[in-house]
Image (cartoon, rainbow, N blue to C red; front, side, top):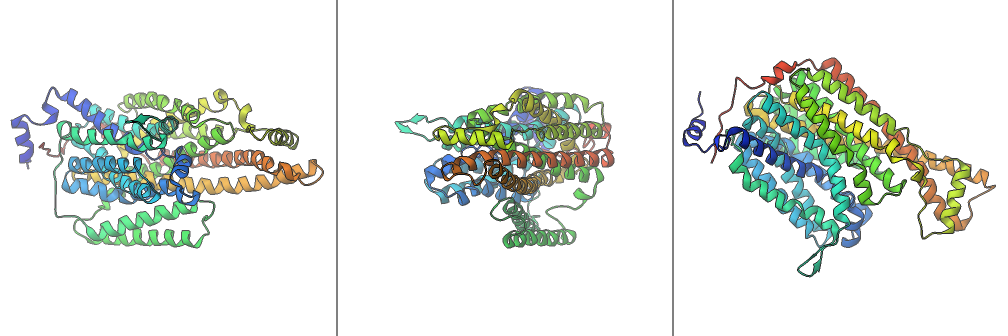
Length: 557
């Protein structure tokens, strides 16, 4: 059956893909989609470096400050399935425009926040906008790009943005936080710019979307409300429980953590039961039963878990142990986006010749090698050296002594950041294509939502798990070093150097905890590599023609 709106668009000449040459418009459409995705992804990390400044300016306690990050993650991760399905039902371009507009408005509110409540509310609203924009952005690629090399290249660029965003967020966060611009005679705190930068980007994306993106079919009246309620609250509860488990003051054994995890799992079990029985489910279970997609979903849950944990622990190490400023810390990750672009370019070309198994299997192996080498970073934590550094710190409290100033960035960090990024590019691109392989055009929004959900839940779970491991080894190392120092010093550490002792021993202990987290992360990602090699059996020929015989009617207006 031919879609009449598609025919009308073709005959009137108002289809964006037919104006000024299809290739030109497809290129600008891809730029729009990827800029929006970059904005959403980098917002997960851009505010991290600014947290101390936010806490000071708005008088937010350390315990409440983590909600600046957690509030965004909760709304984003919890609403992704709903956002993807709304795009399928009411038009992906329409929901995409709604999402980026909400995101822009929320960013403006965050940048102008005068108190804790206003800031945290804006972060939750940002998460809502991101949950609407991100899955529909990915689904719009299938709507606007024909199957074959063009769609493969579009997915490659989109996947690269998902990896690059986190690194650019750290870089931008460090740079913007250090600025204090003056507007109309009023000084603006740099941390506010980490939010305000999104306002023109989001509004521009909403403005240009009708001009560059074709709309998908809409199917109003089919929203599965029971599924939406149980799925959304189940994911929110699960993500919150996982995030709570990763906080040192709670942990996995905390009653509140256990309650939220159990509630989340129970609601998701109920969600699956509901989806089996309703006529128009929020998440058609056929999306999860395909072997190729299931492999991609599991892989894309494990891989981001290791990658985002790398950003977290390495950014702390270069600042707290090596003594980097926030801007220097951001610049330290600059090789990541460059290596990611190189890897994405190579992967995009190889997708036409090699099966996804070989690309993703190689990429995950290389990423694991990078994490393994991060785990070999060390500082001199011998009692004699620690006593020497403690003495230097106690002698001049106005300066900070860093144990990691002997770590060579160019040999211990730079090559493995680049290797990690290259491996991620080889992984993200074939896995993104595999995750939407064989999904009916009508379900591509919810298929994209599942992929994004796996990444968000996996990232939260990975960070919580590796944080628990890091804290355990950090505490054990701190106790061991304290005992060794006391033994060499012939007794307890003198009272006047206790603060210096805690500072120096903390650096040495964190190095041990962080490197153990890297080591476990390496084995996590190698597990993903094993899953890819064993279970991913789709061929590159199948992906190249995916959806070619079943195009969806599109219209503009």
